[in-house]
Amino acid sequence: MPTKWVLESDLIFLEPAARFAGLNPNAVREYPGPTKVAALIYPSPFCQNSIDWMRALSHLVARNRDFELFLVNVKSESDMRESSRTRVYPVLDDQILTLLNQINQADTLNLAQQSRRVENILERLKQRASEALRDEIAYLYNKER
Image (cartoon, rainbow, N blue to C red):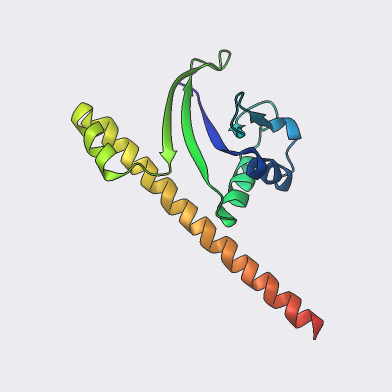
């Protein structure tokens, strides 16, 4: 079953992230309603390159912006309607995992493992972004001397 990745955040955070990634502004889809929540979906017509999508994600991570990350199953390549949606970040708390475990142990274990992997990757991404910023600042100060 085909899947897509959905990155959701406030529009004021997601638009600059998409610009940073060099994506077409149409890649950011604002949800209707009073909230200003938007999504960046990979793959989609305006976000066909996973590297661009990851670049937008790294922009949010490096700036400690709130976001949610979903893994979405779709009907087929020709029918991109959602058949299921699983939130993989932020990681579900232990109480919710315990409840889900009572319903379906195998799927809950898989969800917990996916969420932990994403959390570890995002933590490494945040660390690398912090190190890059520190190096860039050090370079600027040394350049001025």
